[in-house]
Image (tube, rainbow, N blue to C red; front, side, top):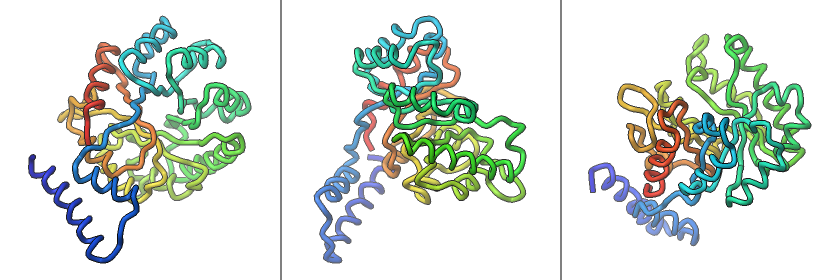
Length: 286
């Protein structure tokens, strides 16, 4: 046991002792969580994949690519395009492979111009989260630009909620570069309704931007149901999960994520990359 693991374990045991000393008996679920945290025995129940990682394969053969994803062990996928298949055809593929698709990335134009079709596609495919992954540079130059995005996010969030879907936004690094002394990402958090707008935290990009994900997770624990699990080397290059420097165990132990999607933007060998990432995460305890 290294020093970090010892301190984490000792801290968990001390917390449990303090609870008893104060006469506050934890509930069954809380007691189990405390024991698991102290022992570091929690594991990911379901590991997902952002299909952008295998987009070059999806462009060639969607059914076979999904089959390979399932063979590796992934049980959830997040779409980034539908490759000219109908929602019904894709849903059948997923069902046949035992996959589910709780999330999808859609360009903001899809919500602006064809909201009804976007939400109907989400219904058929079983998406619970519709995620906007990117803002164009010319529309994010000022804080007022971000406030206007927050207004649109709230509006889209209301429409999504009316059909049983949750709207979310996925970050890169640019949202953490201060403008006029303020961090745009924090403007988005402050100006959007927490019930209507959730956040998908990309662990690579927030780390690349020099920010600590645990700060945001502790300040806004209910805002982050989704994450992108992406690793970073010491020289800030993207790499397969487990091959870099990001301490996923520490993050996962404190987060309240419901869905974890592996992603690599530019893998040399997509299948080898997602296989290595899955192998690491399937054995990770926290």
